[in-house]
Image (cartoon, protein in one colour):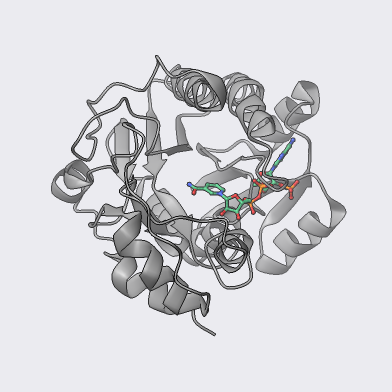
Length: 284
Ligand SMILES: NC(=O)c1ccc[n+]([C@@H]2O[C@H](COP(=O)([O-])OP(=O)(O)OC[C@H]3O[C@@H](n4cnc5c(N)ncnc54)[C@H](OP(=O)(O)O)[C@@H]3O)[C@@H](O)[C@H]2O)c1
């Protein structure tokens, strides 16, 4: 199959590309930098230097690649600027979907998130509504997610992967990165807030598997949504940081997500079914 990976050099993309190549696909991957093109070439993919905010160049790139499927792994979180990330969800997705349409692409697979659901007490399933009443920074995040998902669904053949919070290589949740640093500087409190995690390898595996999945929206998370009081001490031990102080309470939307649909309908089995063991990979 011919596959166009938008965001091929990110935390997920750089694990996804070699897997697609190993399965015999022809992969074109995008990046904004010459170094990114070099990295993609070294992996065996065709690297294209293009900015998603340049719709003419993006359209030309997709047309030239003439893919069967576009995989959208674009995020703008390098500087932890959530407004940038909302923009890429809205405007970047708009340009990518338009480019895909104009190139006659059959299927689009897109990265979304599994923590944009409305408030509740149990882990959210896919039918749970998005948290459209949210305001402030969370409102901005949720409306960006809604824009991304709505635009992707303009192509009848689409799969939306609502990923859990990523941990592992290239993510914030690893030794020496953003969250480790928060733990070390006392900036994190372990509360009742429930998170669903996903090892970044499982995020890449799901994007490969989604080439064959039925059209739909799926929570791609591990099997064990967990309160901060449970997971944070285990994360701290794994990265060698001090255990964080404990607190109480959670925001009503901090409920985690349920992967029953993906497990039952798609036979989705994460390689790292729980952060309990998965965090063990962060040591060293
Ligand atoms: N579900 C989650 O928890 C989740 C999901 C995603 C990311 N994250 C976190 O976010 C952090 C940063 O993510 P990341 O390393 O994947 O990097 P990133 O800076 O978010 O970039 C991701 C991809 O998007 C591309 N991109 C960004 N802006 C672009 C633009 N204007 N035009 C074209 N391509 C563009 C990047 O390409 P180039 O930079 O090569 O141009 C890269 O391939 C990670 O530490 C990760 O933990 C978390």
